[in-house]
Length: 379
Image (tube, rainbow, N blue to C red; front, side):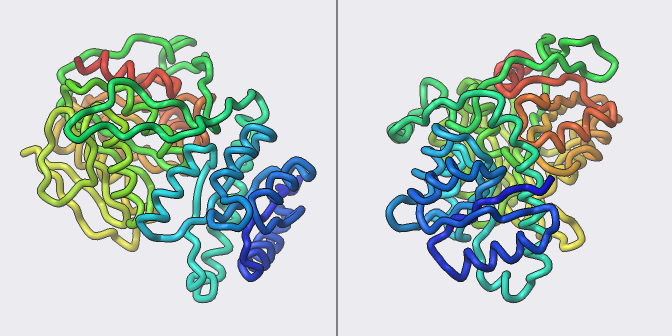
């Protein structure tokens, strides 16, 4: 059955181009269009699409407000279009908090210059988030908070975790088992160890997932952390700043030569690769065009395996594809621990599934368990 899509944008040109690109896929059907957020809500209620593509800047009602209303009234996977600017990144992160599943850069030049590449990427995104629809239809979605979380005073850290985004509600731990373990492994106690590094990799759904995990960590978390999130270069600095304001640990976009230290999470910069060495220093390298992902989880995990042997705790969170699987294999060969997020709490169960199916996961945890278990394992 074809994926039904509602296209929302105030630009007539962009609505037509997106509709044409999607309609060229025989497994996608554009069932309607809307020119502003109010129309989007009405059309979503009337047409019940499987996926909505959503612009942010629109008259009458902006995209974030529309997403928040849709999540309250007829929860539907939303793919946001974003400008490749710092402000565009901030807005996109707000949209993900409101319940959007994923985003794509809104670049008119790419549409004109690389139509086939744009078509492939857009259709792939639509198909992937359509498969996440089970999460939206199987549980009620709570309203999003009316106001943003307060920003802590300079020099202070938040005392508690932030409210959950509207589009991603807690799930009971799944009865999935870690390879070789018994059913219910998701609630098993983690293995305690003096880890020298915690490495976390993620993609689709990752911004919200990372926020949920990292806001659970205490200010005295004893291990350094490295974070790899598939994200454009213009977005990672804004994302790191956002996490730093919300978390009790410190978070920053990694720079070449940064030193790992307890309670500091370094986020790989978009468009580049991040490696760690045995001296505790971070290396930032140019993004290799031969690699699909920039940054790539496998590269960071692989460098951690080489530098720290059995002293790494790696976590693979929600995301499309299998990035992280080969890095996890190297970590396991060195004696390190690998955890995977469970299917029930993933937006896209691709990356964690690849690790689990390869028999590389020491434990499988629900998203709301991971932060607590990281603290238990490291403190």
